[in-house]
Amino acid sequence: MNRTAVIGAGPAGLTAAWELAKLDLPAIVLEKDPVVGGISRTVHYQGYRFDLGGHRFFTKVELVRQVWEELLGEDLLERPRLSRIFYQNHFFDYPLRPLNALTGLGPVEATRIGASYLAARLFPTAETNFEQWVVNRFGRRLFEIFFETYTEKVWGIPCSEIGAEWASQRIKNLDLATALRNALLGQASKKGEVVTTLIDSFHYPRHGPGMMWERCRDRLAEQGIETHLRSEVCRIEHDNRRIVGIEVEGQQRRRAKPTAGARHLVDADQQPPLCSRSAPAAGGHGRSTKPSISRLHDGRPHR
Image (cartoon, rainbow, N blue to C red; front, side, top):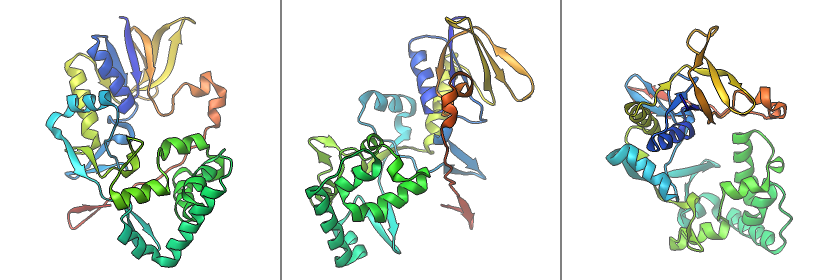
């Protein structure tokens, strides 16, 4: 059978399989974990649902939004956003609210941030890394009290070692002036484009982000595309021109079983299993771990 094997049942893999199904192309999805969704899964525990970190559904791409609506319909809800930054024993609203920010920072610190921003705009530096990119747009003071500590905690490497191109994607179309303009005038756009960081509402599946991918798995099964869980790809066979077979380790980890007739491959795994075999340089990539702890107190979930 001339079908496609999709490695990984996270958002990328299941969406790829969904698009193949629309084209009436046969496929099979292989996932090494016991659940679908990847890091966008929703964990079920004692009748409660927990996300692996915070997830918001927002896109400027119409085709992506259409896929969400196809899968969830009325179960795709719109919700107001509540984001806050805890700094020096004070919660700061984000996007910024002038009175809240001034109360938390105090006039002296607010003046220091403003002066630092003005200096950065008057004397910008070359932008080759994350630190330089942020300082040019927010000032040295705001970089040191927020961006530097937050970024290094999350990614585990110094800001001077992260490329400026990465910063421009993560903080696209945003600088201190834009954030203040949005806080004072409510203009969450720059040159007619929505600034993603400043949105005040977002879409969210009724039962968590995992609902999206559980629904996708079920809809794929209705169209004949199976999702095999606890199935880790251990070997891909090819004849130097095309794939002739894939071996998968199932629940019995010592025995490998071949998948039948897969001729095409979509590798949507976060850590492609063949990197160490086919591209030795990939072994140098580092990893960081950010634990997400949820607890139950008096029968109610808390984060």
